[in-house]
Length: 442
Image 1 (cartoon, rainbow, N blue to C red):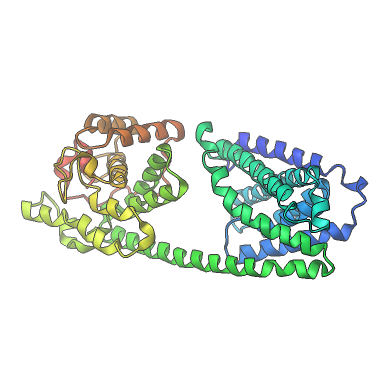
Image 2 (image 1 turned 90 degrees about the vertical axis):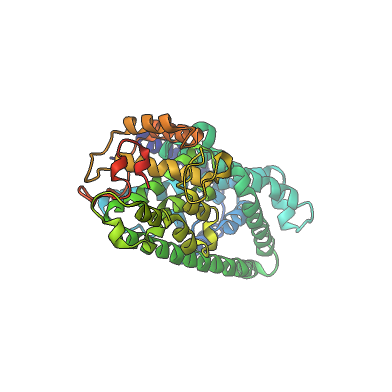
């Protein structure tokens, strides 16, 4: 399967042609080469530092300073070298081609956005205001340029998201502009300060000093991401420990996380919540580490006492993860993913809306993967049959909204789990007698 869909490649080609069109007047402008080269080099160095620190995003102050100082075609050239020549990821040939396509897309997108910002700024007389340090009037064209920059970025981002990720058009652009305005606005102020100092008697050296506090903030942001990556590695280790202890669940946690993420996206949750729901799905069975291995691997039916011990795993899991602050509502999902709408679930027998939304999402994802995975006591059900069973139990066991969201997501994307279970895992003694329905998800 191609990493980048054909529609997305065509879209990238069109945006690239638009970027080239923006650059066509460059030779006739008479702009000194060093005036374009210097901000381009600074931007490329900032991008290299961001890549080294593993910080996602783009260093916008330099781009916006170029938009405030240079004619639109010259400003559009500033991001191109830095975006095109970032080191490619090592990996198979397909991954390298995808990385090259991403770099081309980023260069074209930024060139168009910077051109739009510069065009807006110059049309409102912003360059004269920057040269003469005419405050507060200089803020008006600068603010309009930042807005044009945000609009161009979000318009292009939404288009590629709809085509590359197959997100519905009604949701592809949702929230993009609102999330980008504040951070890019701050970058715009820094870019304006750089532009004013650049044209001052102190020259470019003084302008570059503006970058120092922003570099410090980026470094702190990188440290935060490293800490979060360490937390995620800890989560991964916990899940691997569960997989080793209970062969039945090998790959199950990852797939439940993937299905939970699909449901969350279909419900229109923002990206942060989608990520939390993915963690909830991955960690939902971590409490099995507190259950005796002999019970998890027991052949034959469990006694009522043994079943009660296994049904303690949601509480054990909650105790394990409640100290991980960034998990948020995922902790409630770990505790309550075996509750049922009719109140017959465990551990607390919550009824209907008393069950947290995150737990209702994970419950559907958990049952779906249990039915569509091969077990030693039965073969996997086809996806349509599993969905029919979920719909049959909706209202009593599962939230109908979550079942409908999963069905819609599967109809559009299909089910292609990234992690697959073992072909012949150990049986699940807690649920082996219950193979006729979705309660096989324990």
